[in-house]
Image (cartoon, rainbow, N blue to C red; front, side, top):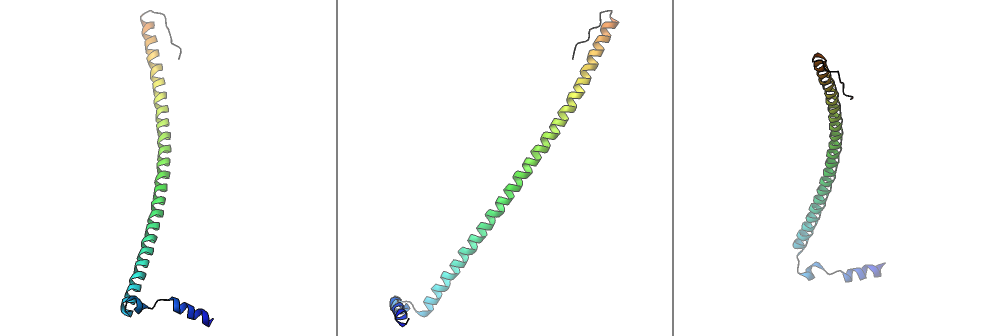
Length: 113
């Protein structure tokens, strides 16, 4: 064990050998830690923003699909109602034409519908 700690101590370059004072060394370490914390926070914020945007997009897509489905149902119902109205109107027109022919002495002719 003692041999290991001496080998480690020998492999570590002393701070003063690099030309840094203890204050400079401590300042650089503090800056490095602060930058690390900033990058971690930035990454966390980015990941949260991505997750939120994915949730928002999924909700918007689900709402759009629901609205599309509701719109299709509404349009189909309205077209069916218009179709019924047109059928009744056409029947009235045919009956009116038949009545005109009868009044004019022409044979009644009812088109098949």
